Length: 283
Image (cartoon, rainbow, N blue to C red; front, side):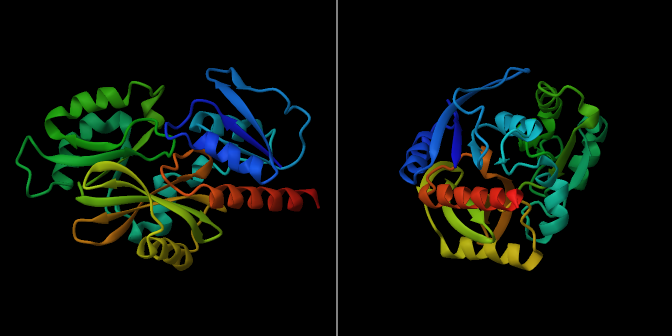
């Protein structure tokens, strides 16, 4: 079993910690570099490896691993299954964003008044209305966040900065929600194996927390809907000011920050799943 860790990703130091854990479990590990714009992955000592391999690093590296298909399973990061349109249709009734407008980013300026009028909150006055906008895709092509009516044009310009063709980019708009707490949970085959709170009262925190209510909520959603597009992955949960829990978003465990999650069960789950899939492929 081989683990590949990308250098200089995630500021909490988890790649190094996970590397140490994987080695303590008897797995081989290597550091890799990812060079964008066609440079690809740079490493030594991996060319002849044919056994199960797992990669942990950036979204760009995960996409490269998916496209190249040189390592198996490599990553669980099928972007087509991690889009809003994919999981909203499956678990939308549990999602924070359950009433929304999806639109081409290229058409945003024309739709400006329609978006703010349709998603208006009675607490905002004309000219200062606010909505939440995020990309449909999971690859963070632009940053999601609250957008004010009076700076919408500036937001649109910034959102397009790294977009090569905004005609092919979908955005999602919804009402602004008051969120009290946010958690990242890591799920393996329908069960939460590790979790961390990463936001509380709009402040960034990093607290290892296997909150029973949150974990049971995630597991209930998966059990009720049958939706878990990857065998090991992240489900983010939030608690509103009303106390209600909602699904916030989903993501690839191979390319997500893990905050203060307990790492041993994550490394164990990913290794176990990789070995299982590799055995199944070899038969």
